[in-house]
Image 1 (cartoon, rainbow, N blue to C red):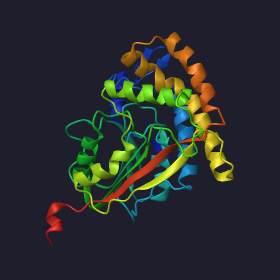
Image 2: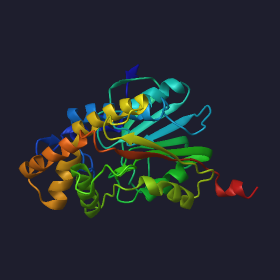
Image 3: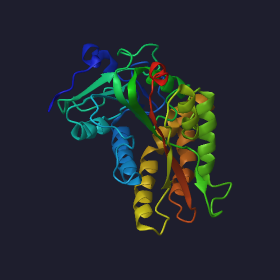
Image 4: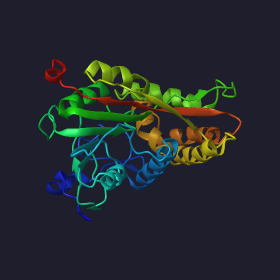
Length: 310
């Protein structure tokens, strides 16, 4: 394990984080990401990582990558995925990028964290650099995620892969136990509309397959998994997932809401906290059999145009 090299070591001012309504936010390209980067949120991100590991049956990726040399994780967050993948592929260089330097300093030799914004016109690398590009749970992070997909296509080597693991913000129910006035469903609708008004749409998971095809990716696959909101299922596997999901939502609901509702709807912190009382109760309501969908959408193969002509 060695200290991670990073661009932010040259600019320590980006760790002078702003605060708003009692939560801490990123400094680099301040305001472009709507959610906190403080210890509370970082602990929740670790819980979310555990949640998805259970949902995906212990898998960290689905693309059929084999002996990659260079891997990029866009929006790496706490960097846990990169550190785990470094153990899977010890001969690969793993690069994780994020707006916040919240990753650990002590990491495997083949891991590097960098402060970078995927919306930049040019990334830090030449074309055809990566064997595999990974993104995970980036809803609400970009004005147009299609641009990230398009740029990724340029930076992936011929024969390389891209994979996006995304959660759909919409809540679903198959047995009519979810009422129209269920507080968590109402919160979801408010959040979707508020994020859209700020130019950061949440509902991207169900569009990724089409966007990947439009960008030129081949062999586009998609797998869809269910995440119960809470442990309402009888099935032991889904009950465990529901327990983690419930805790993830309860721990994150304030951070998901504060900046979005404050800036889009003009609500004060007190108004938001009062509103969230019923939302938290709804999340814990075992009589409402609601779930989210997470789409591995998709793992996609790149064949550059000059090779397609052969």
